[in-house]
Image (tube, rainbow, N blue to C red; front, side, top):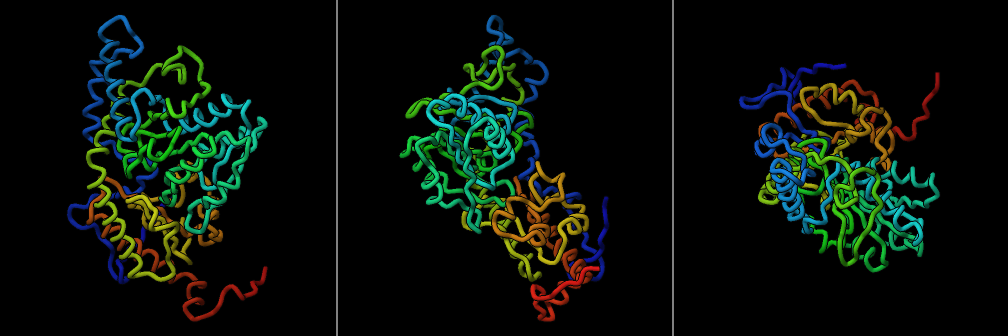
Length: 424
């Protein structure tokens, strides 16, 4: 289903893409990122001539593949302040999350059966926790404040003598809010509780240091930081304290017995190179993305009323902006800007028309949650694209509001919350 909306910011003519801007424009970098050409270049030999199995220990094809895997392990470890032996390769962050949570739950069952998470976690965490509840584990789902941040006092109160794991995501995939991970890690360390973080959106975008932040387990994914899809990693702390997890896939004992299966060598090489590039360019890239994000925000706020940002602006990923356009239906807005790839929720739940559970957790009503759009700016977005997207969104919102009796009533000063609607 698609719709075409003509018009520019002032309502006459059409918003046309300036020279150098190629349509459609991709601004959904929380869902996935474009493969960096430098990453593809690193992967190509392992997709073609260097095709050995990294577990083949008795010939050169296998040795070369194994060396490439170990190099990638070091590149990933360096980005998060870990050692190479603490990196376990998986098929992606969903598997890493499952391995971390189920692996700890099984390994430490005799110590306790209590897990703490938060209501705004990714479904890979929430659904795994729900599965464990069916198996007899207790799970506490912490609420978040209106800015999307977890209350550290709530966390302290929730920990008891049966708590074995706290799993709180580093940065939210819908609203981009960055949690106080170092403080959470400190609380967990003091209480002798294992701390896992889903850091998919954070790694490569903002500084992450597993030792300074007292992180025991960390999930990351290749395709969120300009690497390939289908590859991820789990960091598992080896000392102070040593963390043990039960394997979830049985087989040949690969990855030090924690994750069996033939390694995806080209993917792993790509993930390693993506992490290397992120480490070198993160600081400059963050500054550039903050400038683009703030420009988009200011342009929208300068031309539209009844819009607001969801989640803390202070504790936020550089390229993330989630905004509600009140008195506009989000799906209609998406159709109106159909030459711009953005989303009205996370990529993993966008098949449903339910309002985002993350936005509802911030206290937004269904109508406001339904009017929200997530902009995800990334490495390959330009200032000209931001200008075009802002103009297009302003134009479409203004046109949709012209058709909205609610917006008209609000502009006339009528308090619509006091209206008694008649059912027919």
